[in-house]
Picture 1 (spheres, one colour):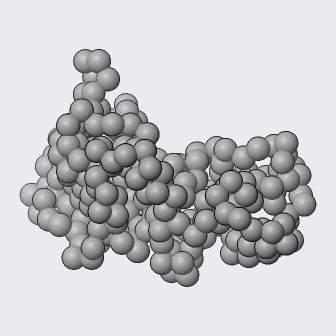
Picture 2 (cartoon, helix red, strand yellow; picture 1 turned 90 degrees about the vertical axis):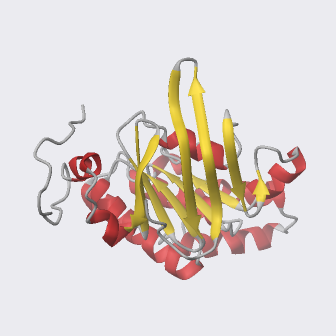
Length: 266
């Protein structure tokens, strides 16, 4: 399997193994996430995408292997070291994970007020800047419960970047959104990467959107990394299981001598 980038890696997974009881979820995964790039992780449900994300931030410990973030080995790091590394991450959860009892501004300000010593005026200024970046200027005092699905995702993204992280993890950023709103979120992800030079890691079932936003794509299948490359090369893959998965949503370049019987997905 070719190495997709010569850029330095913000995150490296080395020989990652994880099982729950008899169920093997990750079976020797080696994967790097180039700094300042967007890497998408795709694959059928139950192949370990979310589990892999939790290993990156140290919420789960592997049975074997290493997780290295910014040079820190997460599996042997002290609580203090883990805390320092986690502060360099932002995360956009699948449902936005917003507090409906708070205003938009209070939701975005939540990490700032816990981790930074800023005056209320300074907090409001930073929050307004981040809301403007995601296309929601002047929304600080809006009730979170009144937001549309797309607006909730944008507020979640504003909160994810409010601490100016070096890496943002996206867990199904387009889930529950209509196609037009989903396209808008994809455009926002592309714009954020270009403007802020953040390393993005995206897991998603939206294959079309994933291909649009990604610089690199990795596919997990049966707990293993079956393909990993720059986007253009990935779409020209000859790996049958990858082509079968992608062809459910995309028209791929034809290959000479293409395998006739491709795996199916439930």
